[in-house]
Length: 199
Ligand SMILES: CC(C)(COP(=O)(O)OP(=O)(O)OC[C@H]1O[C@@H](n2cnc3c(N)ncnc32)[C@H](O)[C@@H]1O)[C@@H](O)C(=O)NCCC(=O)NCCS
Ligand SMILES: Nc1ncnc2c1ncn2[C@@H]1O[C@H](COP(=O)(O)OP(=O)(O)OP(=O)(O)O)[C@@H](O)[C@H]1O
Image 1 (cartoon, protein in one colour):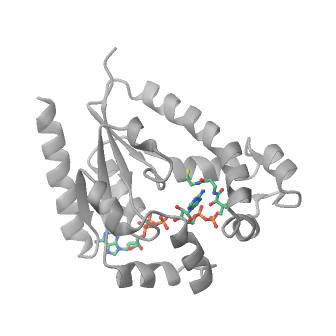
Image 2 (cartoon, helix red, strand yellow; image 1 turned 90 degrees about the vertical axis):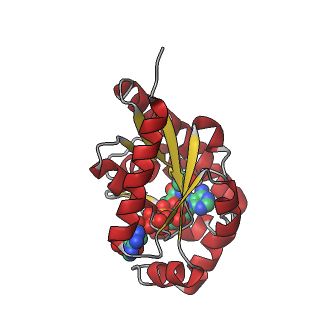
């Protein structure tokens, strides 16, 4: 059975992964957004709510998961995070398989996976694209977000493979420390190259 060439898109917090994923989508490349799937499954009426409430009593309500509260519980506690991941990750894998089945005829698809290296998801993809920007650009972007502070940022960074290591393991690096137009140009060049390789 044929299947699309699969590009894994990853990068550390605030490096511009979602923005770059949207650029791929703009070029007509189907994108599987692991984070968005998680949000949907954790939102109001989401299918993971009973299991999460069972494991973390009081962490869900009518609007779904209380993300600030659950984040505070798990981002400093590796065991708790592992328990949450055991609930979340199999459901994400199922959603990813369904996505692939829907796009079986596409030449190229993107899996947007924040923790691609950390969780050994390299084996799911044919090539890895890492988005990267200088650390001070990353920090400024992240700290500008609502609900974020230096402590939470530091704890999340500590859970992620350092940017330099991600870049070293990438097949392609997209620079997001430049203008949006320049980044979009890099994405267009890469899509042209990946598509040409298929011919
Ligand atoms: C704990 C939760 C509810 C907090 O939600 P919140 O909206 O506050 O944060 P968000 O999801 O945007 O994540 C913020 C940053 O933390 C990183 N992060 C999220 N989960 C993890 C994890 N399991 N390990 C390391 N970093 C993580 C993200 O990549 C992102 O850079 C949420 O992150 C979650 O459910 N995480 C576990 C599921 C998971 O592994 N998701 C990411 C991959 S699909
Ligand atoms: N050249 C660029 N490329 C990508 N993003 C840029 C660029 N210049 C500025 N930005 C801005 O940087 C921010 C990047 O945020 P984005 O949500 O894409 O990051 P992310 O890596 O997906 O974050 P997280 O992992 O925390 O979810 C956006 O507000 C975007 O507009």
